[in-house]
Length: 130
Image 1 (cartoon, rainbow, N blue to C red):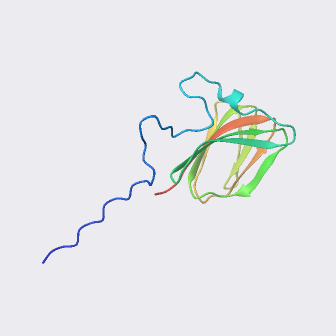
Image 2: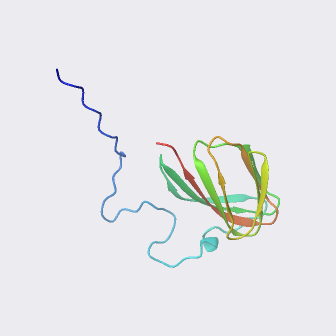
Image 3: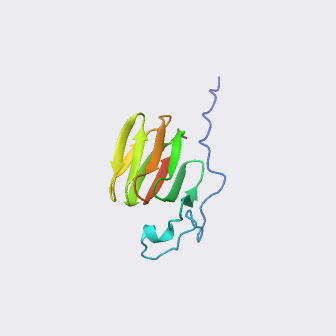
């Protein structure tokens, strides 16, 4: 009697091809300062998506002083890296005040919020489960 075969792993619907870029909204093959790609705007939180697909999201943010993102959660693990200024990250009730070069991991399904103690910029990478 023949055993059922295991299903082949699913492949992404769009495959990489020569010359295609997985990143957008960012110059290619140039030395860059990420802080120059996401300028501050008075009284706002500004974002610039660099990559977005079912597996990962890469976004630059600029927060004006006093701006915030209220408590929420995500289906993926998020790594926030502060590029400039100072931001307060509350992750599952624990408060982290981060400065340039510092980062925090915000685990999936854990409540988190962000507040701009000073105007600050960050790089956010979210990795989603398969």
